[in-house]
Image (cartoon, rainbow, N blue to C red; front, side, top):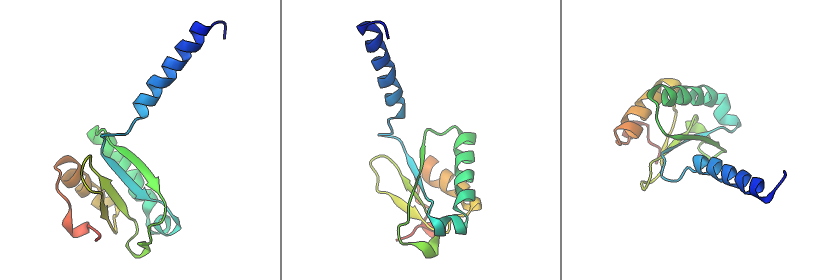
Length: 117
C-alpha cells in the first residue's frame, strides 16, 4: 500500500464484491444438512438443486441450515420467494427437485403434495 488513494480503491473494490453477494430480493432455497438429513439423502438432493439452478440459469441463493425437528421428513428443503412466506417441503428426493424448481420457483405455485405444515 503506497497511498491513501490505493486504500480507497481497495475499499471500493471490496464494497462492489459485497454488493454481488447481497441476497436481498432474490429467491432462496434452503436445504437442511444435519445428520439425519444427510443420512436420508440431503447431499444428493442439494447436488440436484445446484444442477437444476445452473441448468436453468436461475438467479437463486442456495444455502444450507441445521435441524428443524422434522427428522421424519428428511431431506427437508425450504423455498423462500421475495415477499412471500417460506414454504417447507419434506421427503425431497433428487427426483422431486425438478418439480419444486419448475412449479414453485419458476411458475410461483406451491407444490401442495410435498409441503410440510
